[in-house]
Amino acid sequence: MSSDPSASVLAARPVVATLEARGVDPAPVLRTAAISREALAAVENRLPVSSVLRLWEAGAQASHDASF
Image 1 (cartoon, rainbow, N blue to C red):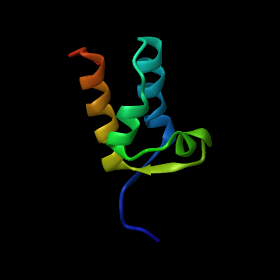
Image 2: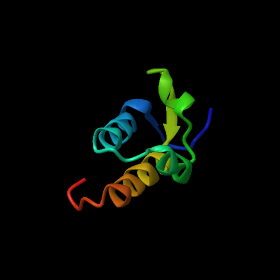
Image 3: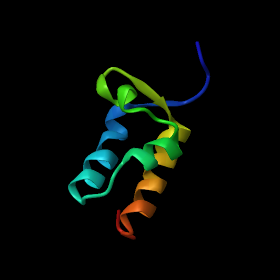
């Protein structure tokens, strides 16, 4: 069993949905976080916490919204 902390994909999906709703392409943000769309597809998937944190940070930067 891995000792690396993980998070549900449900912690990452809102970033993609929000970027898409704002007309921002989430692909570069996903690449920055090393997360694939395929990884987000199944609700039972888990992602490294570090990747989810990078996703939120990159999403905020891409959205140009300090309140992201």
